[in-house]
Image (tube, rainbow, N blue to C red):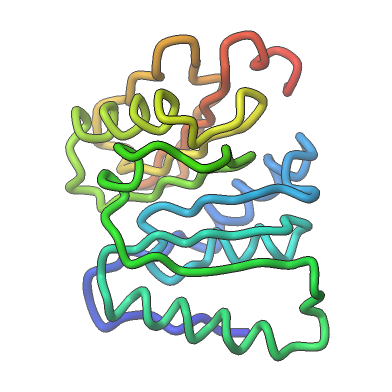
Length: 187
């Protein structure tokens, strides 16, 4: 199914990068029955792909109302599909990722996708990562996948967490961040 894309304001993850990300996550087995948080969701491609690969819950967070409405429409279509089961959950929040991360989570997520606009400053990115961990948004055995411009400064992992792998795909850099005591187990 083709995803609806807003006329402006989003930079969808390329197919090559998306395939590499999911090949990586599949090899770790982290998507099976996972709760997924997709920040700066844009078209919802990352979160929706996670659902198609075994995740059971998706919360897509997008500040742009038009983009969020398109993701909601895509999810509505998916929920009518025969492959959608009663165990699957998905919803869209129209909210800034930074505001969400600054609040305390009800329950942690197993996988957190962060794909901010390339203009999102490194310092803001580091603050977002720290808030997600400090406020309980990421399970201690979870994985944060951060996608940024390859020209940006590398992010700094929150205290007690580390960048376990990073890869560049043309203009895109992808970072995998895990709790320090779990990084070696996942590889």
